[in-house]
Picture (cartoon, rainbow, N blue to C red):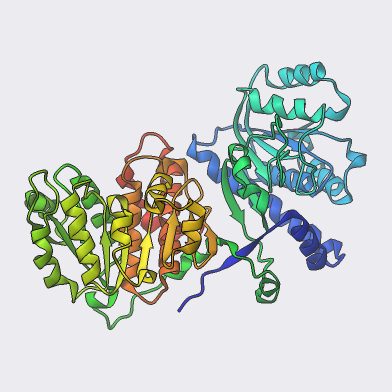
Length: 525
């Protein structure tokens, strides 16, 4: 069984101690890693900028530089950006004078100047300016044209809570202007920390690139308005020995996990070797959800798929998706799945490897009764999504360790009923995928954070596709429910990223994500 690569999430104090031990005073090694961080930030920003628009012919970059190593990262990111796009131009605006910076940051300054002095403008330290001078300087910089990208490398994990004057005014200037297209932060947005004093306005990032280590402040709920989309840039800090020192319950899934699925199928194989999934889905009013999750399961490689749907949908679904085996089920007067169809489910249930229930079934109580009885009949792994996420269905079944629940926040509150949400998450014996901007796989008191995805997914049907993908991986077997859930969510998110970078976040259909599952699996990006 594959073990998915995942790294611990550390408090800032733990991260500082780890880095001191990891580098051991070796400045050459530290400089090598800082260069890798800068290059990774630039490459990631160039990809993520495409979610908004294609990169302009002569992109303009603003680099905000602090005294510490985040400043060095941002300067070396600018170097990489300018190397990648020869027509690009950059402006570096320092918070502190160069001579006050750490040696690595000074060295990064010198390298950038040597590489691109003719395409570079350096603005004097903002620390010596009043607000009026800052505003005037920025106006002069943008009066003809704004910036396509701003890289925030001002403060890192050693920054104190809050922002003091005049730094707060400088940061607010970049938050409020409409002359910046995309804002990214290195490691953490400047101004966030383990606590956030009232009225503090940190740098507002569109993307935050966690370089080498994910620090706990980026996951704190009170910091979320400033974080933007999280990306983990894994530099291989945590080998097996180091990981044993940090037996954390909170970890991040590395993007290198996805290639686990990238394998040639054996020559001696047939469809039964890739699992048989039973889907109990759909209603007369919500048939699209059933069709989407079926197509997702098939596209993600399941060998056999049997779908139980209302009989009124059967003929059209057979035509729309002939690869699945569609079972016409008796309907309630309102178009839901009737309880009398349990016999048909019983005929199929002994021949399948996993069951997926919920997308499109609606709120018909009789459909919920059917699902409750079907879950009792089946002893294998079951994914519950959408309207199947009801405490009366879940609580009626024994051996809940075989369940995968995929709720968003509203559904999570519904199934937790009288318990507090966090208490329910801690107590549930199976696997819960807590869907959100940064989803979490929660199991046995542990949390695995997933940073893939894009706001393109904030549209109807994306959850139905996700259920189909995870259900497919569950049926194929060979992995734990945790790994199947995490891999399915990562794959779904990376496909959505590829779609957004090709077509943007707006003018797309949800089902187009399926067209990018292959690209996400076959390419490293």
